Figure 1 (tube, rainbow, N blue to C red):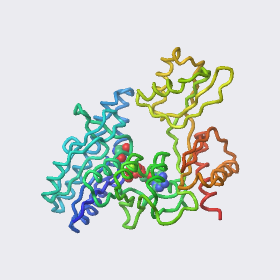
Figure 2: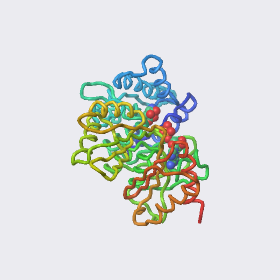
Figure 3: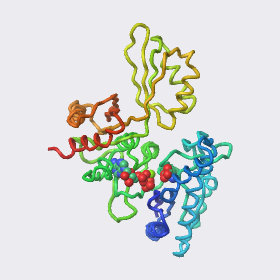
Figure 4: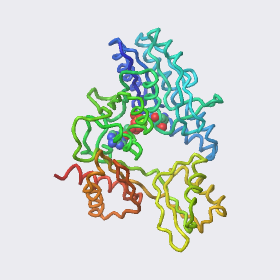
Length: 403
Ligand code: ADP
Ligand code: ASP
Ligand code: MG
């Protein structure tokens, strides 16, 4: 007998019919003789609807209260799914993060899972019940409800798979696997049979929504067998693993991210410690910084430009302006109409032609690059937000359509 974790995303449980369909998928695994832990997201657009509800009352609500509200969406899904399984005569129990003991950090809206108590789930599994757990939520050391960031149910699933040494963690979604880019934007994107953890982590971190980036990080760390597949069609999906069979000659995929904003500190002093001061201030407020560019210092002055998540832009500016005297910058500039497009592939850096090919595609499409940033297996460019979709199509076409 094996233990399987199955996670179903919002569209997979969007209505009664879908919930019943999902119950059928769960039942199949259970009736094969497996122990099954199920993780669910909120139904359809519930999380967005809850955010809109909050904004009707207070558009600056505290993150603690937002987490209290948003975590309710997942509770609806798990109870409904349990009812569907009950109707099929199958033993099951739905549990929230509080009941399971999913302990997290206290960073509301962006918490990280620290540990998962095993007793409750284990005792339910020992009684041969299907265990259905709310995704996306945790509990901090004060007992307050936290959420793990948008898309965080994937991370709940992988964390449970790691904690219970599951044989397999299946992420069921509304596409039948990981593609070379978002198949909704580029219809001829290709499905990948397999992809490495490292490539998937970069794609997810650069905006490929199909997996939450932290879920991939955890899967790599704890060697979780991860599979992305469709809840709508029964066919093989994409396996995410350490090493893939085929030696990559090309890139694994193209990702886009339009949730970023750029901030520039102009006229900083050209002294040691300036970058440290700036980024230390931001990190103490839990503001994640992504692409960083520092200009060459001239006449005792330099500029530092960086990107943050759009939702953090106002707070980052407030903090920096509050410390304007200590940081000694001349002025601050911002731009929230930018986007980022990235190519990801193992061995990309050992083949300089790949980056050139990406830039050629952008040139041919008449798109201007604002900033460039690379890692060992990724090249990212910052562009005008309006150019992002065009850039993804042009780059994807260059790598996957041309021979
Ligand atoms: P769920 O609700 O199941 O968690 P998400 O909406 O979070 O589903 O993620 C699935 C979506 O991710 C797909 O519908 C697709 O539009 C998008 N997506 C973006 N990039 C990719 C990619 N490279 N491969 C597959 N899907 C992708
Ligand atoms: N319901 C949450 C969201 O919409 C978590 C998830 O779907 O993974 O972001
Ligand atoms: Mg998701």
